[in-house]
Image: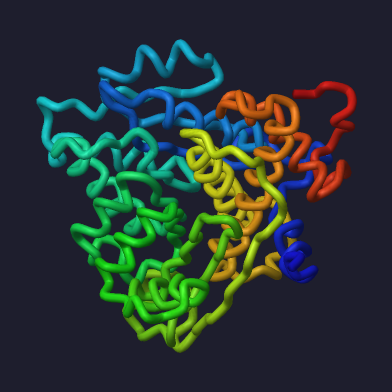
Length: 342
């Protein structure tokens, strides 16, 4: 089942034009919060994917124990080793508040782990992001964190959750979804139970759902939407992916989804476009776009490397995947992928 044409057209509307009209930062400033002693690859994959799909700037907010390794992977990433185990969230708040105010989207979870100090910093970051009206992507251990405290994200419609099979099962149990509900319908129920958060359920086909109910006055203020606004929408992305799933592919997805959300924030602020796409649609559009690009990049990498494919093989395929879906013009990749631009 192809993605509906009107969805593709709306995604194209929030893609920054490559026509020389924008300055640095107006094609997205992305933040990834994660990276501790044992986990340095995941935040790298998420943040470098953001750049490779077209973000202008990509920041990694991590523990000092991870910073050296992440910096060594790429000089293009801006690394902030500020999540110190010997500090408290209260001490970090002014620094984190200032940093997040310069970003368009926050991706929480890649390489986060479950150590208490990292989880506490992640909770603080999500709280600040909500206060600032940022778009948010939650993946990996951030989904476990949400399961421990649903109020952290419930009702915040500017968020996308990207659970895999086991994470989705756990999340469904956290919000008491009836296991008798058909599997293809559960994401819609999870979204509604979480107050309209967009859910990208990863699987053989990715199921993307937003089910909000009508916004009351408080929800309208929190999400910067009209009182009474509601959405109930489900999109299935079944474009072919690779035949092998390797660790780290989900991080490329979160970086891709986050970048399109950052573009949506730039579109919302008037950096480009005509303002015709309401902010309430940005999470679903970003989830669909990120899913399509990631699955296509996975297929292209698998076709080259077969059984031995690893996540690093997907990164050079992002540009070709984007061009395959959105073309090579001003609103596409902007250059011929046959010339080796990656």
